[in-house]
Structure formats: structure tokens, C-alpha cells
Length: 302
Image 1: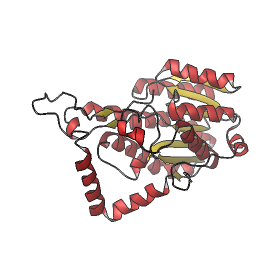
Image 2: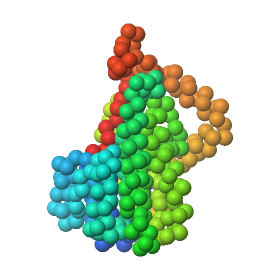
Image 3: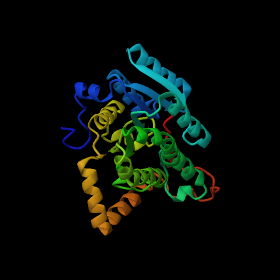
Image 4: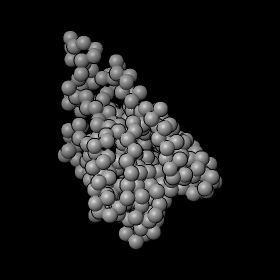
């Protein structure tokens, strides 16, 4: 029922997943917890050699140990995608050690729930989300793609959001950064397909992870678990569709673009109804840098 409602995707058959990844090298960013860690465990269980990339060494090593204890293979690569030098070094190291990787799951991300009024003196919100969600992933792929294209094979999986179809108030920084990477991937996809490299974008609805936890009312909304999201990643890796997005998100995107005044009216009404719980401006008398009580910085993928 949840699959029919577009809330989850069915996992691939285990034999099909194993046939797709056994003996293959799969690099996953944001792999220390949440969707990334769950996907790494599933893919390793199917025979993939997983390369775990994230900022937090302790969590990466814990995930790696769990995989090894279950009979899988994994290697840890601590790196912050917002650090240009670290990303460049990571791409060079991976290429030197493995040549062309088989699959890259671009999963690391940072979300911030904050109105534009709350962001007037917080340009760093946009800088950080752009670095983690767009510039870092692009730089990593620019370092990995030459070997993949030379070998004429590979697969890029973009873990994205329904915000790509349905931009909404409060998430301007996150939506813009995710949308930038989505647009980049769509632009380069024909070039990559000409050299045997496939691309898939997954537009996830709400997934209950550490990144969504700071937005308190999300706890009461239906959503996917990290394990269910990992099933979707495994489905993408197995069958290589160009897009995975809930039917209602795609439909809503069409409605939003063809009936924009209606869409704008609905979202404006939503903002007016919710800004009392997420104030759009600092309280009277507050200094410009004072945090507003409704601002929710999302936790980045470690």
C-alpha cells in the first residue's frame, strides 16, 4: 500500500542486486550513518566492495566494522566535501587505488530549514549547503569520471529530494543547492551516456534521519526509514532508471509549472499559516544576528 501511495519503493530482488554489484566497487558519500550507512550495508551484503566517505571517522569505522563482521568488504575514506583540497586528494587517491570505480552514490548532504528573513545575515547557510550539496560532489565526480569514461562503464546515483519537483518555503538554501547538482547531472548525462556511464536521480520524500530530525513537526509526518531509503538506492543501482520520483511529486511538479498562480497561492497560504511557529524575522528589539526560535539548521551528513 505504501508503495502504491508513492511513499516507498520496492527493494530489488536479492539475486538481481547481487548480479549487479557482486565484485564491483561502490563509493558512497555520507556513508557514516542514515541512508548512506544503510545502503553501504545492503550493497556490501550483496557482494560489493564499498568505499565509505564522510567527515566523521568514528562513525565511518563503526559502519565498516559492521560490514566486515557480516562478511563484507569496506574501506574508510574520511573527507569533508566542503574542503576543496580534501576532495581533490580523495579523487586522486581513489583513482590511484582502484582506477575506475563502478558506482558512485552521491548521498552526502546538508539541509537547513530557515526562512529567507532569518537568513539576511547568514550567507554562510548558502555557502555551506552549496559546498556540500553541489560543488563538493561535482568536484569529486570531475576527478573520478575520466577513468570511468575511459573504461566505458559506470553509474552515478544522485540521492536528491522531492524539492527538485516541488520547491517549498523555508528550504531555499537546501533546494537551490540540490537543484544545482540535479541540473548539472542532467546536463552532463547525455555526454556520460555516450561513454557508457549511466545516471540516476532519486527524488526522496521525507526520510526520518538525523538530517530531518531538527525540524520537529517532521516527526509526526509519514516518511521513509533509512533502511527503506537504502532499498531505493539498491533498486537504482540494480535497474539503473534515469529518475525515481514519487508519482505525486512528478504530478505536483507538472501542476506547479502549468498552474503557477495556483501553486503560488497554496504555498503563500502555507507560509502564512506556519510562520507563527517558524517566525520569518527576529523578534522586535533582537539584534540582527540573534537566532529566531523557528530556525532549524538541519544536521549535515557526517
